[in-house]
Length: 322
Figure 1 (tube, helix red, strand yellow):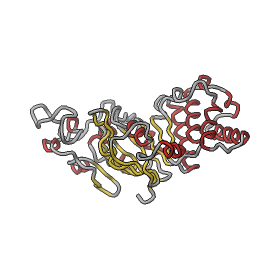
Figure 2: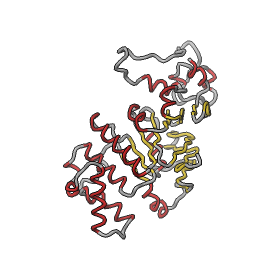
Figure 3: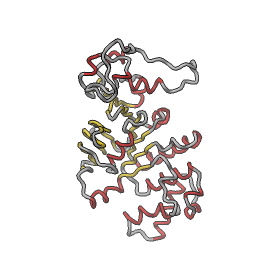
Figure 4: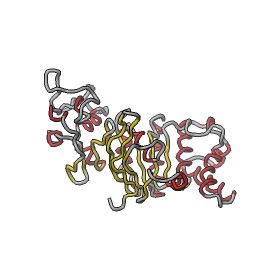
């Protein structure tokens, strides 16, 4: 993408001998929201932290506006931090209990805009608090005095104080009540439209991802298995794992029993399926209704099966046209 803000190429992360991420590549445009979905342990948070250099990458490249984040020294990385912000899953744990809300929001301004006068800094804090639905008087209170939803609003306000170019949201609504989740999601959408911030949104909640994402990445066991525009992916998933994720979403209008995936279900007397993590081929073969012996031999490449629709599956045609 010519207007890409973030470019990730062949990113790998290993924890010892364990490959947590394998050859992840994607682009994120300015002002775009990219949803990242996958089950627990698939590598979503690891990917986010590797991009932000909160954990070291083993290989690959991460470019922000053409500048390599992985090769920056400490001073240059600190300079770039104002453009890279994150909202964590646990809103209360992400706030310093010894700092008032005002101090927490003032800290990034003191570091990156030290020339601001005290009145100007206080005005910026009040403006941001009101922008996220909180009152100016709350600036003197401490995190334990707020609800979970209010703490997440404070976390978002802190992340947006410097108007970052990239905001990473790591399961920002999973610990909140459903009624509060909608408010937080709508707040993120409004802030993005207002400030033009690009957003990488990690979530288990496919309904939330569908509501706010422009494109969606699907990750499984550390590998990118599908990438497509939101409407395309939800209407015509091309990877069996994506189909499994969508089939697992409860349908209140349908029958109570789980919906079965189409395709052939492997049995112990059929093709030679290896234990998870031991095969050289497709990582999903041991759970895939379409898998054949050939799926064990080579890792399927991420290929473009339609315009801007990518899937890593040897048998994607059978999946799409079944």
